[in-house]
Length: 355
Image (cartoon, rainbow, N blue to C red; front, side, top):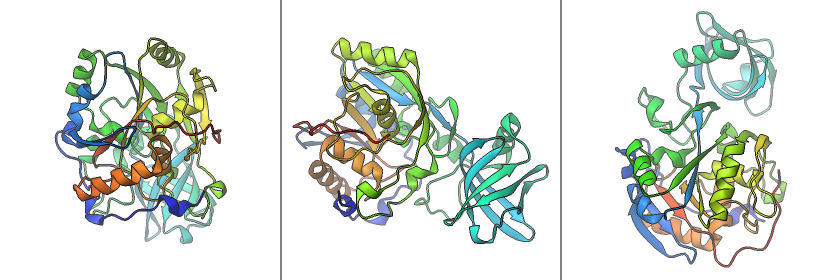
């Protein structure tokens, strides 16, 4: 499938630099299975769902993975990507071309790493002198939130981002990017959903830097999808299966929850416990097995995430929805507004995930 089929244009000034306050005051574009649109507010979500529905949220917690260090007299900016054991992390570094293996980078007194290996696109493997909880403590003290590259602030991340770029239900540390659909929830909204008979279950998928990587191919068949670690507990699998059995709907919050649920679902739709890496790549033609509705933000053109929502709600419907959102001045991307999506009707022909 051609990647340029998922292209669209929008004004750059629609990229949100900061979230709205309060969080649930964000706008919500409701996209029906027939493509019909409603313009609502995120706090309306309890009125748009039904008693017996089950929200599935990603409880990953973003770590302060952006570091500023020094190599001799030179400044180095590092964004951690994925731990690979023994205090080693895959990371992106700028300027990466000057970081030969063996180079030491000092971030703060008692906090340093050595370049173990170097790739061709600015990626490096760093060996930290401190690992485990000690490294986590150092990141909390000296790191900054790894905001997406399309948020271009001159001053960089701010102290408020430590709260803004984290969901209210974040628990499991390990992500280097936020599951942004969940940023719109507040404690009050969660209470109202519970009072309305809408359940909540959690999964964990540690979002990696691959979520921001552009497609560098012309055809989706040639794309090498990044992998991320995730877990679906037996308790969550049981809750999802019980909801389905009783006639409720599974409402996945974010593409990360969608990808993990679909990775853990059997062909018959039964969800099983899961723990490990997933590299599932969902494009139009895929038959969804575990998800009935989806809450998600607005995504980059030609991105794997936009392809996923097109697979769920139909490419034509999503292009029309995005065009309407642009016309109405919706705010885009991580700190932007949200969508509530219904599955495209008729159901797409069966497909098979790439895992």
